[in-house]
Amino acid sequence: MFFTLYNQLNVEYSNITVKISGTRGTERYLEIYHGHQALVESLKLIRPKTKNFALDFETDKFMSIISAFTFTEEIISNLKISSDLKRRFHEKLRKFYQYKLRPVFLLVAFLVRDNEDQVSIDFVSFITKNELEINSDFDIHQFEQESDVFKSELNKPKLS
Image 1 (cartoon, rainbow, N blue to C red):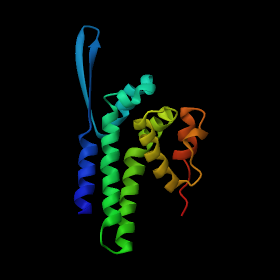
Image 2 (cartoon, one colour):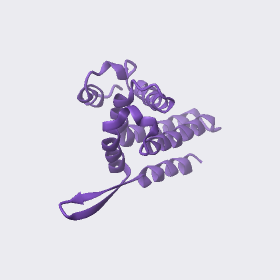
Image 3 (cartoon, helix red, strand yellow):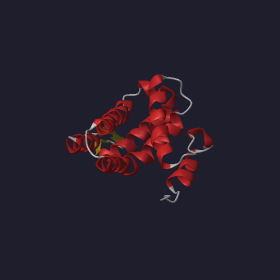
């Protein structure tokens, strides 16, 4: 069951799509992005209007991934399997967060950290919960600038 849900999470992640169209000179263009690059492009679209994060069309991509991730996490907790196997499944899910979601999601959390709408609060709570597993001192409000997120959080040596 875990592998089915994990694979579904991967499929959902890979199927995230962002289409950007416009004009360069006299030529029209359509660029289509998937997976990680779609999240990066969504971040670019969200960045200038972070106060409206909850209303933004791109936000559903982030929240959908969070929902699938959280559901998979809950299933792991409720599976009737050995604690060692649960730990391994949990670690696999942690790696998914660290390698696929973390860079973009941390930046979004930084940008919407002071928003008071429920979607932003839920988003920042998800990030905080996952970051506290990596660094027990994590606080999204400790960063003064966007670049500080990368300097301090993403470049920390992993503690064993």
